[in-house]
Length: 417
Ligand SMILES: [Zn+2]
Image: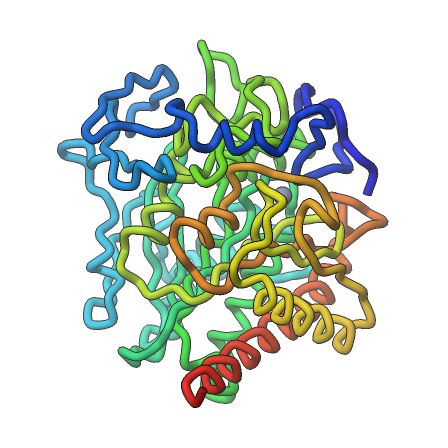
């Protein structure tokens, strides 16, 4: 992967450096300054006017973790926001919010999912509904918010309803043009749901949460207008700029590997969690009470398995365990397809990135196992041929299965120690 040193670019150019950029002159200290400066620490109940609001956002923020600059938007009065209670095991009926993709049995023939091609959002969302329809005892579909353009942020929960299950979060499509990521997320969901009764306990003893298209507006835009679009569809002054959602999370927000320039493909937004798409993910990870043990986020391209931190050089306290897990995953991929996936820290094997969902999941949401997977391929970059979708799905399925086994073995060992 070539190094991208000039991030100030609109979407037209095909970036090889898909996750971040290298600001050679920034010192490590300046990153820390950025993270802990007053700029990102909000007083309780502080009100911030946000000129980038859309109609479903609110105009002030509350604070509940000033150390990390984490805050949440209160519910807009009268809005029907997703309630996490609906995700609980006893109440399987998650609120179904969107009009455009609510599932009707008669639509089934028209919108059939397959992995022979890259599918549009409506097909992917109908597919989630179809799984719930076909497997109501283990599947629940819900909406965790709305995008900038009011598309549903849709998730699928798969669970055997055992109250002891830890939870796994798997998301994809935070970057619009990385089409293989939603394809693989749905491939894995499909496999787990349809084979649930014959899968090993390391899979079935977890509650699975799939969010296959984190950035639905950008995803559709990359299908209809600009194949190389990466960001969401935030506007400034009526002009589409887009925020890089994977630079919009609070942990390390504003540091190296992100840009304050709206036209940059790495534009981090005017403040942490300025975007509804990143807020929706944060709210589930941080405020739902769901005991997430694993966070996996799928990207492309490069064939790399990354774990925290991406925003600073310091090794995270769980470095050895996370490295071990990543190695297990890489080995499983190699045994499955012969493909090689590199393993390591973002700064070592790629470049730094600040304000990412993966760092947030580990650093703020305190999820023990957090991984970012850069899928295939080095050769085709973002335009992975559709003929490779299933192969990629298979190798990543092997990788996820191996990780779940590793985690269960690790937990068993820790208990006996
Ligand atoms: Zn990406």
